[in-house]
Length: 126
Image 1 (cartoon, rainbow, N blue to C red):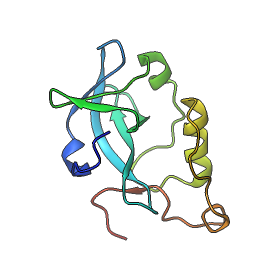
Image 2: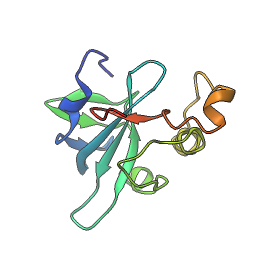
Image 3: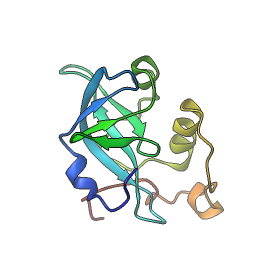
Image 4: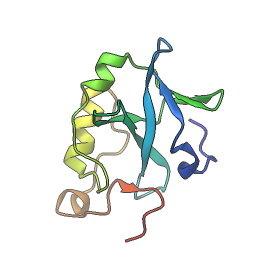
């Protein structure tokens, strides 16, 4: 994904699956704590539904919308961790496994021993 985009500008954009079906609207963006790069988006999948986490890499912004290269069913079946708080290293690993992604750099021992700054939300200062 384009790395120079302001992650807060993703919020409110429509999100589509690999087949062009609308999956919802971006609700929140989560940054990698080590790099500050947008890593996950929480997509609101319906009015009375939940947010589904989707990886921002290898997703793309096309025509002012987020296009996620996975099918809608896989996205809606992603682990549900709620939104508005940090993703733990274990939760992030579950998401990586769910989407069949390789974790480029595994969490350090500091991150797996209670570091709650991992997977912070864009625009939220602790």
